[in-house]
Length: 126
Image 1 (cartoon, one colour):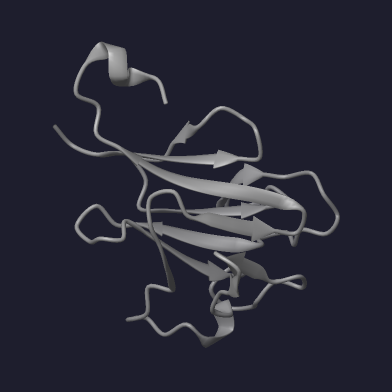
Image 2: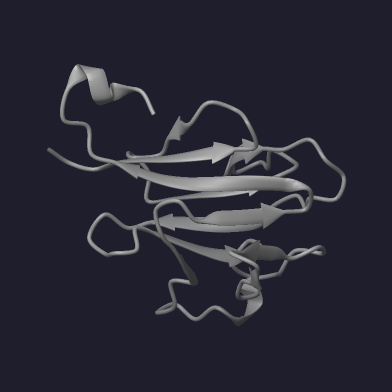
């Protein structure tokens, strides 16, 4: 059975991101609707960070600060270390690796990254 990929923002229930290749976390829903997860906090940039979901690699998540062209004002912290600024990312770069159970701090908010292999209905809840 395939792995399922989730993120959990603060204390909210986990959100399934298994069917996307990438998503953005930020404060404002852009015209292109690239920001998939909104956090209503002025300390968070419009597009604060970008996350790649890579089923073929381990780690399965890669994070970089900003929208891929400009870094965020208050930066993105992955496991206590500052992630790569989006303006420094090359096409071949995937960003900062994030493993199952790792935390990403975005201003005063914590995002937890989860990979789950569901083996039965009983295991369907995280």
